[in-house]
Length: 340
Image (tube, rainbow, N blue to C red; front, side, top):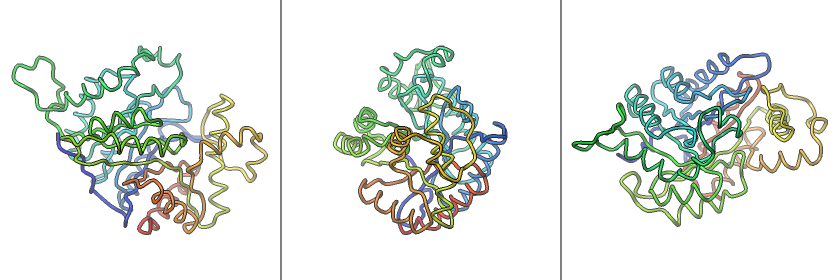
Protein backbone atom coordinates (compact mmCIF):
# COMPACT_ATOMS: atom_id res chain seq x y z
CA UNK A 1 0.00 0.00 0.00
CA UNK A 2 1.29 3.46 -0.90
CA UNK A 3 1.86 6.24 1.61
CA UNK A 4 -1.11 8.52 2.33
CA UNK A 5 -1.60 11.47 0.04
CA UNK A 6 -0.58 14.23 2.42
CA UNK A 7 -0.22 17.11 -0.02
CA UNK A 8 -3.70 17.31 -1.54
CA UNK A 9 -4.24 20.87 -0.37
CA UNK A 10 -2.54 23.27 1.95
CA UNK A 11 -3.64 26.58 3.40
CA UNK A 12 -0.45 28.59 3.78
CA UNK A 13 1.99 27.02 6.21
CA UNK A 14 -0.33 24.69 8.12
CA UNK A 15 -2.65 22.07 6.72
CA UNK A 16 -6.13 22.37 8.16
CA UNK A 17 -8.89 19.79 8.03
CA UNK A 18 -12.42 19.44 9.35
CA UNK A 19 -13.94 16.89 11.73
CA UNK A 20 -17.71 16.86 11.48
CA UNK A 21 -20.07 14.99 13.79
CA UNK A 22 -23.05 15.86 11.59
CA UNK A 23 -24.69 17.56 14.59
CA UNK A 24 -28.48 17.45 14.82
CA UNK A 25 -29.59 20.76 16.24
CA UNK A 26 -32.76 21.40 18.21
CA UNK A 27 -35.70 21.70 15.84
CA UNK A 28 -33.97 19.86 12.98
CA UNK A 29 -33.59 16.27 11.80
CA UNK A 30 -30.81 13.84 10.92
CA UNK A 31 -31.60 14.50 7.26
CA UNK A 32 -30.92 18.21 7.85
CA UNK A 33 -27.63 17.38 9.57
CA UNK A 34 -26.44 15.18 6.70
CA UNK A 35 -27.43 17.79 4.14
CA UNK A 36 -25.47 20.38 6.11
CA UNK A 37 -22.44 18.07 6.30
CA UNK A 38 -22.31 17.79 2.51
CA UNK A 39 -22.83 21.54 2.14
CA UNK A 40 -20.01 22.29 4.57
CA UNK A 41 -17.70 19.88 2.73
CA UNK A 42 -18.44 21.56 -0.58
CA UNK A 43 -17.54 24.94 0.89
CA UNK A 44 -14.47 23.53 2.63
CA UNK A 45 -13.25 22.15 -0.67
CA UNK A 46 -13.42 25.61 -2.19
CA UNK A 47 -11.66 27.16 0.82
CA UNK A 48 -8.73 24.75 0.52
CA UNK A 49 -9.16 22.41 3.48
CA UNK A 50 -7.13 19.21 3.27
CA UNK A 51 -9.69 16.63 4.37
CA UNK A 52 -13.20 16.25 5.78
CA UNK A 53 -13.73 13.46 8.30
CA UNK A 54 -16.88 12.12 9.96
CA UNK A 55 -16.96 10.28 13.28
CA UNK A 56 -18.72 7.11 14.37
CA UNK A 57 -21.01 7.49 17.38
CA UNK A 58 -23.98 5.31 18.30
CA UNK A 59 -27.15 5.97 20.27
CA UNK A 60 -26.47 9.71 20.25
CA UNK A 61 -29.61 11.80 19.69
CA UNK A 62 -27.58 14.78 18.52
CA UNK A 63 -25.20 13.03 16.08
CA UNK A 64 -26.20 11.78 12.63
CA UNK A 65 -22.97 10.03 11.55
CA UNK A 66 -23.51 6.57 13.09
CA UNK A 67 -23.46 4.82 9.68
CA UNK A 68 -20.11 6.44 9.00
CA UNK A 69 -19.21 4.74 5.73
CA UNK A 70 -22.61 5.68 4.29
CA UNK A 71 -22.13 9.30 5.40
CA UNK A 72 -18.67 9.36 3.79
CA UNK A 73 -20.18 8.19 0.51
CA UNK A 74 -22.78 10.96 0.78
CA UNK A 75 -20.15 13.65 1.34
CA UNK A 76 -17.66 12.29 -1.19
CA UNK A 77 -20.41 12.17 -3.80
CA UNK A 78 -21.15 15.85 -3.20
CA UNK A 79 -17.52 16.93 -3.58
CA UNK A 80 -14.77 16.52 -6.16
CA UNK A 81 -11.28 16.90 -4.72
CA UNK A 82 -11.23 17.12 -0.92
CA UNK A 83 -10.21 13.95 0.91
CA UNK A 84 -13.11 12.40 2.85
CA UNK A 85 -12.79 9.83 5.58
CA UNK A 86 -13.52 8.47 9.02
CA UNK A 87 -12.27 10.15 12.13
CA UNK A 88 -12.92 7.53 13.00
CA UNK A 89 -14.26 4.07 12.68
CA UNK A 90 -14.46 2.53 16.14
CA UNK A 91 -12.85 -0.78 15.34
CA UNK A 92 -14.12 -2.79 18.35
CA UNK A 93 -17.62 -2.42 16.86
CA UNK A 94 -16.72 -4.12 13.57
CA UNK A 95 -15.10 -7.13 11.98
CA UNK A 96 -11.91 -5.96 10.20
CA UNK A 97 -12.94 -7.59 6.93
CA UNK A 98 -16.23 -5.66 6.85
CA UNK A 99 -14.37 -2.36 7.29
CA UNK A 100 -11.87 -3.32 4.59
CA UNK A 101 -14.76 -4.06 2.22
CA UNK A 102 -16.59 -0.84 3.08
CA UNK A 103 -13.58 1.37 2.57
CA UNK A 104 -12.41 -0.61 -0.41
CA UNK A 105 -15.81 0.15 -1.92
CA UNK A 106 -15.47 3.84 -1.08
CA UNK A 107 -11.98 3.95 -2.60
CA UNK A 108 -13.30 2.26 -5.72
CA UNK A 109 -16.05 4.87 -6.03
CA UNK A 110 -13.88 7.87 -5.12
CA UNK A 111 -10.29 6.90 -5.98
CA UNK A 112 -7.52 8.78 -4.25
CA UNK A 113 -9.82 10.59 -1.84
CA UNK A 114 -10.67 8.19 1.00
CA UNK A 115 -9.04 8.04 4.47
CA UNK A 116 -9.64 5.39 7.14
CA UNK A 117 -9.04 6.52 10.71
CA UNK A 118 -9.31 3.75 13.30
CA UNK A 119 -10.12 4.19 16.98
CA UNK A 120 -9.87 1.73 19.88
CA UNK A 121 -12.85 2.95 21.93
CA UNK A 122 -16.37 1.71 21.16
CA UNK A 123 -17.69 5.28 20.98
CA UNK A 124 -20.76 4.47 23.01
CA UNK A 125 -22.02 2.90 26.26
CA UNK A 126 -21.98 -0.75 27.29
CA UNK A 127 -25.66 -1.38 26.55
CA UNK A 128 -25.25 -0.02 23.02
CA UNK A 129 -22.14 -2.18 22.55
CA UNK A 130 -24.30 -5.19 23.32
CA UNK A 131 -26.92 -3.94 20.84
CA UNK A 132 -24.13 -3.82 18.24
CA UNK A 133 -23.54 -7.53 18.98
CA UNK A 134 -19.98 -6.78 20.00
CA UNK A 135 -17.97 -6.99 23.23
CA UNK A 136 -15.91 -4.46 25.15
CA UNK A 137 -13.15 -7.07 25.11
CA UNK A 138 -12.72 -6.43 21.39
CA UNK A 139 -10.71 -3.31 22.26
CA UNK A 140 -7.92 -5.59 23.50
CA UNK A 141 -7.52 -6.90 19.96
CA UNK A 142 -7.03 -3.46 18.44
CA UNK A 143 -3.40 -3.83 17.24
CA UNK A 144 -4.15 -7.22 15.68
CA UNK A 145 -7.33 -5.90 14.05
CA UNK A 146 -5.44 -2.96 12.55
CA UNK A 147 -2.87 -5.33 11.07
CA UNK A 148 -5.67 -7.50 9.72
CA UNK A 149 -7.18 -4.50 7.90
CA UNK A 150 -3.77 -3.59 6.48
CA UNK A 151 -3.42 -7.16 5.24
CA UNK A 152 -6.82 -7.01 3.54
CA UNK A 153 -5.72 -3.85 1.70
CA UNK A 154 -2.50 -5.50 0.50
CA UNK A 155 -2.29 -7.19 -2.89
CA UNK A 156 -4.05 -10.55 -2.78
CA UNK A 157 -1.62 -13.48 -2.85
CA UNK A 158 -1.99 -16.55 -5.07
CA UNK A 159 -4.20 -19.04 -3.32
CA UNK A 160 -5.43 -16.52 -0.72
CA UNK A 161 -8.74 -17.94 0.44
CA UNK A 162 -10.26 -14.86 2.09
CA UNK A 163 -10.06 -11.49 0.34
CA UNK A 164 -11.70 -8.10 0.76
CA UNK A 165 -13.46 -7.37 -2.53
CA UNK A 166 -13.25 -4.47 -3.17
CA UNK A 167 -10.27 -3.74 -0.96
CA UNK A 168 -7.32 -5.91 -1.90
CA UNK A 169 -4.56 -3.92 -3.56
CA UNK A 170 -6.21 -0.52 -3.04
CA UNK A 171 -4.48 2.54 -1.63
CA UNK A 172 -6.61 3.40 1.41
CA UNK A 173 -4.50 5.39 3.89
CA UNK A 174 -4.98 4.03 7.41
CA UNK A 175 -4.63 6.38 10.38
CA UNK A 176 -4.53 5.51 14.06
CA UNK A 177 -6.63 7.74 16.31
CA UNK A 178 -6.20 8.05 20.04
CA UNK A 179 -6.63 10.00 23.24
CA UNK A 180 -3.85 8.26 25.19
CA UNK A 181 -0.36 6.91 24.57
CA UNK A 182 -1.65 3.46 23.55
CA UNK A 183 -2.76 4.42 20.06
CA UNK A 184 0.36 6.56 19.66
CA UNK A 185 2.58 3.55 20.26
CA UNK A 186 0.56 1.39 17.86
CA UNK A 187 0.80 4.05 15.16
CA UNK A 188 4.52 4.44 15.70
CA UNK A 189 5.34 0.74 15.66
CA UNK A 190 3.27 0.17 12.50
CA UNK A 191 4.63 3.28 10.76
CA UNK A 192 1.18 4.84 10.31
CA UNK A 193 0.02 8.47 10.59
CA UNK A 194 -1.45 9.41 13.95
CA UNK A 195 -4.26 11.75 15.01
CA UNK A 196 -4.79 12.76 18.64
CA UNK A 197 -8.23 13.70 19.98
CA UNK A 198 -7.17 16.82 21.87
CA UNK A 199 -10.44 18.50 20.88
CA UNK A 200 -12.15 16.69 23.77
CA UNK A 201 -9.43 14.71 25.61
CA UNK A 202 -6.44 17.04 26.03
CA UNK A 203 -4.65 15.46 28.98
CA UNK A 204 -2.19 13.19 27.16
CA UNK A 205 -1.56 15.28 24.05
CA UNK A 206 2.14 15.92 24.58
CA UNK A 207 2.84 12.49 26.07
CA UNK A 208 1.15 10.84 23.08
CA UNK A 209 3.01 12.92 20.51
CA UNK A 210 6.32 12.15 22.21
CA UNK A 211 5.52 8.43 22.34
CA UNK A 212 4.49 8.38 18.69
CA UNK A 213 7.63 10.08 17.45
CA UNK A 214 9.93 8.02 19.66
CA UNK A 215 8.33 4.70 18.69
CA UNK A 216 7.94 5.45 14.98
CA UNK A 217 9.32 2.80 12.64
CA UNK A 218 9.58 3.66 8.92
CA UNK A 219 7.25 1.44 6.94
CA UNK A 220 5.86 0.86 3.48
CA UNK A 221 3.13 3.32 4.45
CA UNK A 222 5.20 6.23 5.79
CA UNK A 223 8.92 6.89 5.96
CA UNK A 224 8.61 9.44 8.77
CA UNK A 225 6.08 10.38 11.47
CA UNK A 226 3.02 12.35 10.46
CA UNK A 227 0.98 13.75 13.34
CA UNK A 228 -2.34 15.54 13.43
CA UNK A 229 -4.18 16.95 16.46
CA UNK A 230 -7.81 17.88 16.89
CA UNK A 231 -8.97 21.22 18.27
CA UNK A 232 -12.23 23.05 18.73
CA UNK A 233 -12.50 26.37 16.94
CA UNK A 234 -15.27 28.90 16.50
CA UNK A 235 -14.45 32.08 14.61
CA UNK A 236 -16.66 35.14 14.14
CA UNK A 237 -16.16 38.78 13.35
CA UNK A 238 -15.80 39.63 17.04
CA UNK A 239 -14.67 37.79 20.16
CA UNK A 240 -18.05 38.38 21.78
CA UNK A 241 -20.00 36.90 18.87
CA UNK A 242 -17.75 33.82 18.72
CA UNK A 243 -18.01 33.25 22.46
CA UNK A 244 -21.79 33.35 22.23
CA UNK A 245 -21.81 30.82 19.38
CA UNK A 246 -19.50 28.61 21.42
CA UNK A 247 -22.02 28.37 24.27
CA UNK A 248 -23.83 25.66 22.30
CA UNK A 249 -20.75 23.45 22.59
CA UNK A 250 -20.25 24.40 26.24
CA UNK A 251 -23.83 23.35 26.94
CA UNK A 252 -23.21 20.04 25.16
CA UNK A 253 -20.12 19.26 27.27
CA UNK A 254 -22.03 20.22 30.41
CA UNK A 255 -24.91 17.93 29.43
CA UNK A 256 -22.49 15.02 29.03
CA UNK A 257 -21.69 15.35 32.73
CA UNK A 258 -25.39 15.41 33.52
CA UNK A 259 -25.99 12.36 31.31
CA UNK A 260 -28.67 14.34 29.49
CA UNK A 261 -27.29 14.28 25.97
CA UNK A 262 -29.62 15.46 23.27
CA UNK A 263 -29.72 17.66 20.22
CA UNK A 264 -27.46 20.68 19.98
CA UNK A 265 -28.98 23.66 21.74
CA UNK A 266 -29.04 27.27 20.52
CA UNK A 267 -26.47 29.66 21.99
CA UNK A 268 -27.25 31.59 25.14
CA UNK A 269 -26.17 35.02 26.32
CA UNK A 270 -24.56 33.97 29.61
CA UNK A 271 -23.12 30.46 29.97
CA UNK A 272 -22.46 31.12 33.68
CA UNK A 273 -26.19 30.77 34.31
CA UNK A 274 -26.16 27.30 32.79
CA UNK A 275 -23.43 25.36 34.55
CA UNK A 276 -22.27 24.91 38.13
CA UNK A 277 -18.67 25.73 39.09
CA UNK A 278 -17.79 22.03 39.09
CA UNK A 279 -19.40 21.50 35.68
CA UNK A 280 -17.61 24.55 34.34
CA UNK A 281 -14.26 23.24 35.54
CA UNK A 282 -14.75 19.82 33.94
CA UNK A 283 -16.14 21.15 30.65
CA UNK A 284 -13.39 23.77 30.43
CA UNK A 285 -10.74 21.12 31.02
CA UNK A 286 -12.12 18.98 28.19
CA UNK A 287 -12.19 22.10 26.01
CA UNK A 288 -8.64 23.14 26.82
CA UNK A 289 -7.80 23.34 23.14
CA UNK A 290 -10.79 25.39 22.06
CA UNK A 291 -9.87 28.50 20.12
CA UNK A 292 -12.77 30.92 20.12
CA UNK A 293 -12.90 34.51 18.99
CA UNK A 294 -12.18 36.91 16.18
CA UNK A 295 -9.72 35.97 13.42
CA UNK A 296 -6.92 37.74 15.30
CA UNK A 297 -7.67 35.90 18.54
CA UNK A 298 -7.91 32.47 16.95
CA UNK A 299 -4.84 33.05 14.78
CA UNK A 300 -2.73 33.72 17.87
CA UNK A 301 -4.06 30.67 19.68
CA UNK A 302 -3.54 28.28 16.80
CA UNK A 303 -0.04 29.62 16.08
CA UNK A 304 0.92 28.89 19.67
CA UNK A 305 -0.69 25.43 19.54
CA UNK A 306 1.11 24.53 16.31
CA UNK A 307 4.44 25.73 17.66
CA UNK A 308 4.16 23.84 20.95
CA UNK A 309 2.94 20.55 19.45
CA UNK A 310 4.91 20.51 16.20
CA UNK A 311 2.00 18.80 14.47
CA UNK A 312 1.92 18.47 10.70
CA UNK A 313 -1.80 19.15 10.46
CA UNK A 314 -4.65 20.47 12.60
CA UNK A 315 -8.16 19.03 12.41
CA UNK A 316 -10.86 21.42 13.51
CA UNK A 317 -14.16 20.46 15.11
CA UNK A 318 -16.32 23.55 15.05
CA UNK A 319 -19.91 22.64 15.79
CA UNK A 320 -22.15 25.70 15.74
CA UNK A 321 -25.94 25.73 16.10
CA UNK A 322 -26.65 27.91 13.06
CA UNK A 323 -25.38 26.40 9.82
CA UNK A 324 -24.67 29.74 8.18
CA UNK A 325 -22.65 30.82 11.22
CA UNK A 326 -20.74 27.54 11.06
CA UNK A 327 -19.92 28.13 7.41
CA UNK A 328 -18.77 31.64 8.26
CA UNK A 329 -16.57 30.29 11.05
CA UNK A 330 -14.75 27.87 8.76
CA UNK A 331 -14.45 30.53 6.05
CA UNK A 332 -12.79 32.95 8.46
CA UNK A 333 -10.54 30.18 9.73
CA UNK A 334 -9.39 29.37 6.20
CA UNK A 335 -8.60 33.04 5.70
CA UNK A 336 -6.13 33.15 8.61
CA UNK A 337 -4.59 29.70 8.17
CA UNK A 338 -1.77 30.96 6.01
CA UNK A 339 -0.31 32.68 9.07
CA UNK A 340 -0.40 29.60 11.30
